Image (cartoon, rainbow, N blue to C red; front, side, top):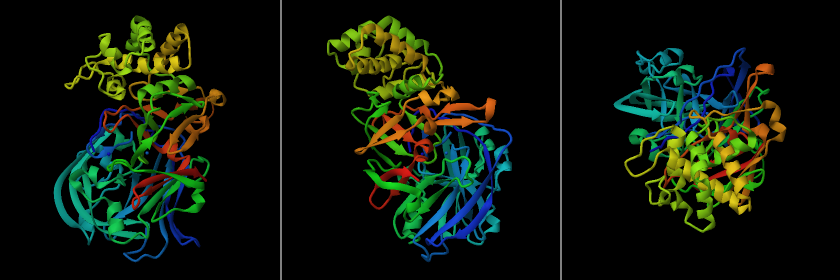
Length: 509
């Protein structure tokens, strides 16, 4: 999770309880940890902000000894309401069991400590007891990780970590002694195992995955995720270390190179709604494949267009409508006169910026509902609304729409601005009329159907349908940025190739 800026995401809690793991070996030489799940009678969920802070992106989604005994090693994942996936590991000798989120958006391993006395969350989760492990080594250096949905603090320790039948020796991890807030209290996972790069590791701790490669525990420096999105099936999915399982995908993977180490970040092309460009990423955006994010997060400018297309209900932005009413015609005239789009809002007096900043820098205040100007000249909500309106109007002018239609359309988009907590509801009966949303990655187009990007919460008359899209605005140079979380990875099997520094996507089986 590195340096992060304000963002918005939704995390859901508990639809499914899962039974203890069942270890099995299959004739394909893969070592598997099977998990089962049982539905709950009641559904609870909570939402919160995802923040880009030290430690990486937060969401608020195996062998024996040091001897290679199989081609690949697998951990089965628990399905958390089709919104979060987590699996079981062991820490210490003998292993103390913990359920963790395998998070490609962060790089540290942490679990609750038996020395966590004053956080209620610790009393509802397994706790690490160093005195019960013969391989424990004291470190003691303090550590703290801040998430948008909560934070943890504690101290570093060292011990063996077991994943399936694989044992990683002398792994540095954080014993969490404080877990404030409701996030970790309500969560069904105990901790997080980060699979990102060391560059964003708090305390510069060597990630578990690095040690797996260094200690020769995997034949290939590759791991892959398969998320089972079929809610009626018991298995939540699998993470495969050391290669891929060909039963998990169809066809060939499309690979893109990692552009910036820290997260598994790569360049992404345009985002299409029903086959039509949204305009914002036509010149390219950055993206992160992040297994720890439940939803699919992107720039507010695009998410608002998606919300409009699927009929999602968000918070009405008075600033946005004010800009359209007072300055809409002026903006259109300036665009037709070939004025530089990035400078329009400063020229009409809504932004103090000279236009050199990226649009995504100016959207952040709308998402977070803040009105103060930042020290480096970024503007308030009116400026952010203006910058979004320019992008939307420019896109409509390319389609030769009339002024009247453009202003009416922009006003509709203002109605669809995401809520501050990111959650947007849709009509469950309207899925058939919703468009496909597509992402261009490399030279390939990856489509999501309404059934794939809408999360159904509850059953029968009490069912709610929640959009799988949420707003996130990140400053350059890392932004504009998309986070392709479990909504995307659930449909596309994802390969993280550490050896060749690339990420691959193929249709999930």
